[in-house]
Structure formats: structure tokens, C-alpha cells
Amino acid sequence: MIRISFRQGMLAGVALIVLLLGGVALRSWMLVETLVEQNRRNSEQAILLTAAIQELAERSVDIERSARQYLVLEDPLFRQRFDEHLSQSLVLVDRLDSLTAEPLTPFLGGWRMVAAALRGGLDKRIGRDELAPFLARLMELNDLLKQAGQRWIESRNTHLLGELEAHRLRLGGQILLALGGALLVALAMGWWLVRPVRQLERAIGRLGASRFDEAVQVGGPDDLRQLGRRLDWLRQRLADLEADREQALRHVSHELKTPLTALKEGIALLREEVPGPLGENQREVVDILQHNVHGLQRQIESLLSLNGTAFEARKLHLESGDPHKVLAGVVKRRELHAQSRQVSVVVEAPASGPALIDADKLAVALDNLLSNAIDFSPEGGEVRLVLARSEGVLRFECIDQGPGVAPEDRQRIFDPFVQGKREAPLPRQGSGVGLSIVRELVGAMGGVVAVMPVERGGHFIVEIPDEN
Figure: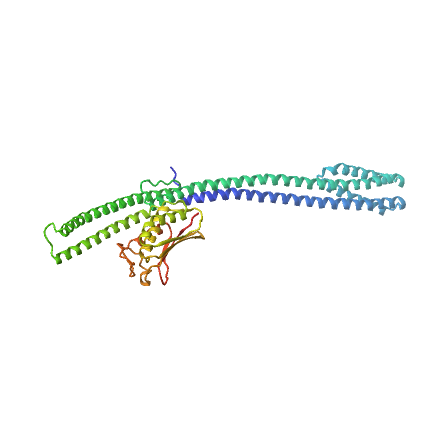
């Protein structure tokens, strides 16, 4: 089986298109050259014919004059002039006959007959009255030759125009066929070359979305097939790595949670003084242990949550949805949270129609921002959620009246386990991964999240592409 590479296929397609269009162009050039040459020959013949007829008419006048002078004066010199003019006229007649102009042939034969009769009459010394009909017929034949010559020229021009029109129609048909053939070749080559590229694009999209269950199959040129096989190898490798990662996470979770659970139970027994009464110093140590165990548990759960979010972020599910409804759903889920802190949430989101979004990831990201804003807002404060849509971008803003983000924390506030220097009004059990999760999810949607430099309060902005 012949294997054709992408480059060879492209070259073959371009060469075939060039041959089709080049063949028509060459045919057109040859046809133009033929018609130009034919028109040149017609023009030359028309000039020769017109000049010969005009000169024949002038010679006829000289023939008439010398014939009349000879009959009156009977001078041999005038007879010699008559013979010279007649001989030159017959040469012109032969020249006209050589042009193969069929309409002139009968009149040329008649001209020769009249010339012979005129010469015989002078030899017999006929009278002027008898000579007059021959001279008149000669002039009449000249007029007839002129008219026939014009008709012949017109017929040749008409014939040339007819050929030009016929060739034009034929050439137009050939051009259409060549263009159609080139278009078919281009479509066939496009299908043959673009189809595997789209297969590669879909395969890369599946790999980016961590969908490793479907094998990568690419058709078309041999080098693209080879690339498809390499991608399938990469798919299998990524699937193995993902399985190892999940297994490692499960192992770490199990290995950490099991002893941590035992520690929690042991500390609980100590606090309940099951082994025996505790002194004041011992109870203080138990409280410290319990506090650190709870902190360690939150860190482990946050780490697992962050890894789980990073994994889910690679699985993008874009669907048509209403950003306003997503925002309203986030606010509804945080109603009790806001009421417990006596914080009012104001939504500024004009109806803007559907957009191509991953509603679940967007909701989680906005929920984390709103949760932080409520926690850091003072009692009786206000949180504003703003939705704007312009120039292919969906822009979400979360603005609160809390302490905000310190200038030195703005560059690292989205890093895992980073908590800003400015504290919330009330103690909170955060681990510093909420904003990291927001960054992961927004980045997966092709967007960006940033904190604005304001003097008071927190002002976070999320921008994602608006692909509708």
C-alpha cells in the first residue's frame, strides 16, 4: 500500500490544480494567437484586394484614354501605351484571382473576356461607337469587382467574428470545467488533509479534558497517522500517570487519616479523663494537642480538596447557560451565611442572554469569592456582586467592605495555604486554599482572576471568555 505524506499530498494537489488551470490558460493563449494570426491575414488580404481593385480602376481609365487616342490619331505610340496598360491590368486581375476570393471570380473572368474583345477590336480598327460598349462594360465590371470585394471582406470579418464567438463559448466551458475540476481537487485535498487535523484537534481536546478512555485514531497522510499513534501512546501514558496519582492520593489520604483518627480518639479519651484525672498543666497540653490535630486534619482535607479541584479543572464542560442565573444561584446558597453575619448581598447583573460557560466551575469559583467576602465583611456590611459583558468577555466583580488585601499580599494571595495579614472580624476556620481553587477553576475556563488595588475593602475581578 502506497503511503503518502502530508507534504506529498499538498504538492500533488497543488500540481493537479496548476495543471488544470495552466492547461486552460495555455489553450486560451493558443486560441488568441490563432485568432490574431487569422485576423492579420484577413487584414493583409483586404488591403491587397482593395489596393488591386483601386489600381485596376485607374488602369481601366488609362486603357480607355489610350484606346480612344489610338482610334483618333492612329499613332502606334498610343497603341503601345494601350497594350502596356492592358498587360498591367491583366497582372492585377491575376493577382486578384490568386486571392481565391470566390465572389470576384465571375467578374474577373468577364474582365479578361472584355479585355480580349477590346484588344481584338483595336486590331481590327473598329469604330469608336463600336468600342464604347466594351469600355462601358469594363467600367461596369470594375464597379462590380469593388462591390464584390467589399462583400468578400465583410464575409471574412463576419466569419472571423463567428469563430471568435464559438471559441469564446467553448473556452468559457473549458474554463468552467477547469475551475470545477480545481474546486473538486481542492475539496478532496481539503477533506483528505483537514479531516485528520480535526481528528488530532479532538484527540488533544480529550487529552486536555483528562478523557483517556477513547483511543486516538487518525487517518489521512502517513505522517499524520504516525502523529496519531504517538498521541495514542501519550494517552496511555497519561492514563497510567493519572491512575498512579489517584492511587497515591488515596494511599496518602488513608495513611494520614488513619493515625490522625487514632490521635483524635486518644485526645478525646484524655479530655474525658478516662485513663485518670488530669492536672491543670496536663489539660493545657491536651488542649494544645487537640487544637493541632484539628488544624492538621483541615490541612489534609484542604490539600485533598485542592488536588481534586485541580483534577476537575481539566475537565471542561462548556454549555450554553445564563451567567445571571449562575450568579443568582450562588447568592441563594449563601443566604443563611450572609444572614448569620447580618451582611446584605447586592447583585448588579442586567439580563444579558446566554453564554457558552462551564456553569458548575463558575458557580464554585464565585461561591468561594462570595464566602470570603461575607466572612471578611463587618456586621451590617454590604457585598456587591457585579456582572458585565463587553467585547467577548464576561466580567464578574465581588466587592466587600472588609479590611481588604494588604499590598504586600496581592501578589501571593492566590497561592495555596496563603492567608493575608489582615484578619476577618470574627475567627474563621480557613486553610488558605479557597482563592487557589478560584484561580484553578477560572484558569481552566480560559479566564483570569485578580485583586484590585483599593484603599478599603476587597475587590476581586473574574474575567472569562464570552464565546457566544
